[in-house]
Image (cartoon, rainbow, N blue to C red; front, side, top):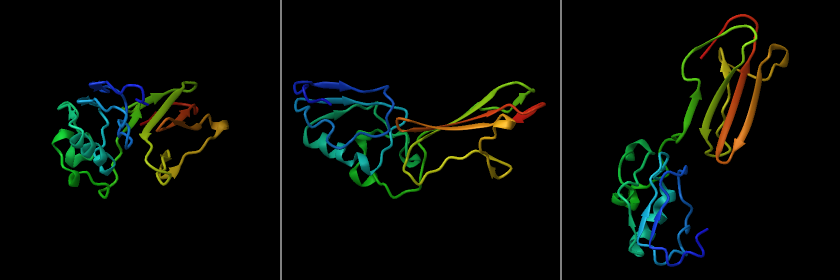
Length: 172
């Protein structure tokens, strides 16, 4: 990715949406001295150990604005101040992103369209997201106006439920 930027001294990736950085990503940046990558989703686990080792061995300063968001025990800590043993992958599963839209209960009348959207970060194939109603999985029911769509967007899973049932419907 950075193959032709060997004389780059400073790199600021802040504001981009990512939770980790692939090992060896900055290998070709041999002159790099300052690296910033502040993001709202930085996951400080064993997959970032390489970065601390690389930064120390190449005299690269990681910006103090680069702080961990996950796991919760490291939230708010500057990555540059951590030690390798703190970056572990054996803790409980934490979702870097989970969002449900709308966030409040809704009142729906006959003929109204109410899209419900659930977004969660992709973790691995064993993670499943399902819509439940009264403890049962919701599936597409075209006659009832319920459509469940699953979409994979980059490293995200987006599930949408449309409800168009007769009468007032309280969803939330």
